[in-house]
Length: 58
Image (cartoon, rainbow, N blue to C red; front, side):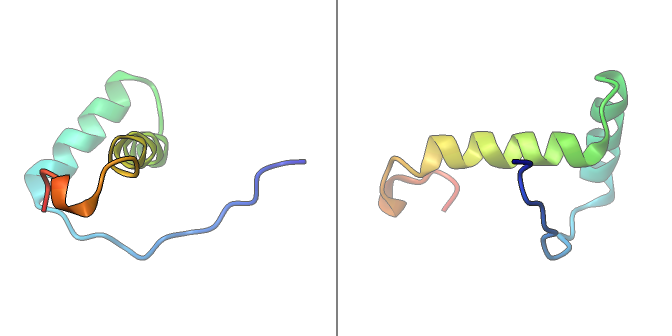
């Protein structure tokens, strides 16, 4: 069975970050949405195991 997909609310980022994201996606010959999904997956994999108190991004 194919994985069900949905959309997320828009995320606002600085123009410079968006430019970096687009440039990276192009260098990898991937769509920006793929890069964003991979980044979210990696972030959650690192942070779901620890407690919120240990999250360096908080």
